[in-house]
Image 1: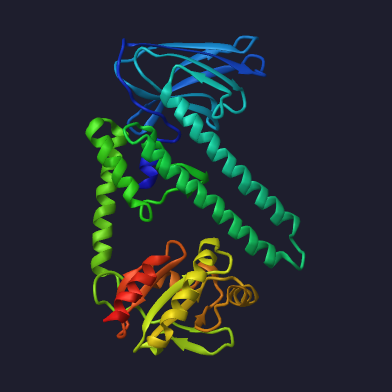
Image 2 (image 1 turned 180 degrees about the horizontal axis):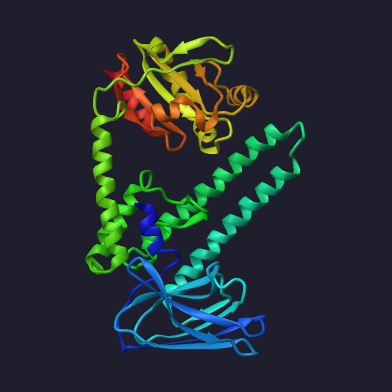
Length: 388
């Protein structure tokens, strides 16, 4: 369902009020080619239709005139890979300046608040993409070297930091523009083809938030209707998953985990019965996991003598990186297991893992009683349990 909606919103902008039914687009291409043409496409339902074209003058200038009865999404393009999406509102007079081979990152836009907001987001997105590309360059430089495994762990950690920052920026961007269609567009941004910044399952609250706001404002607009349909389907999926999932619901036993520890001995999660157990999924390359580890040490030191145990499952790619992370963070006093298979680990599908760190607090019979308790939340919950 995400593919259908993202087709509508390949790169879009916002809706506002009406003045008259005429819009005017003027602009200038920097470094234009000889005999260049620009094309104006209109987004209609689930397809783009070319509705006009403009020859680019020798000095790079171009113009479009069009009559529209309501706010609509349009693309200005040279071809299918080089385009700028606008939301044309009746009465607008827009000016655009951009290099002919990078329309999506114009150097100047006036007359369209929605497009300006999209330009703001696109430039923040480009910054992150450039950072990720630089990490890839480091990876290429280290191919075939002895330190490649260590370098890859570090690069994975840095990449996750950049992606987490962009995820946080996107959420804030949506919150700041919740009554605008730019919030709808932000739901479907990607750092690479198929690599979405927000995921419908993990970030469902934002899909619901945007749907709730825009469905009231633009109930008949096709992309909004498609979002609403997607959100309703996601809600149904979540409810179905809650009913059938072995890790959802109250007093359900956590699925059994049987994996080797760093010494190669097989350890079962069920061997911890009789203790209050924190089942924690982490990896040495995961910066947020490493940041949380000192809190786990603190919790263990406070409550282990009272019957608290930690069963930590790693998604590391090498035993060396895994053991080094345990040693560096001082985690050696509790149970560690891993099959060293990264995101191909059997626990990923068993526990429906979408991200790490992810954790579950288990009672003495192995039932899940809480999930993803962080920092003081974990300590507060443990204090309540052991006080009773």
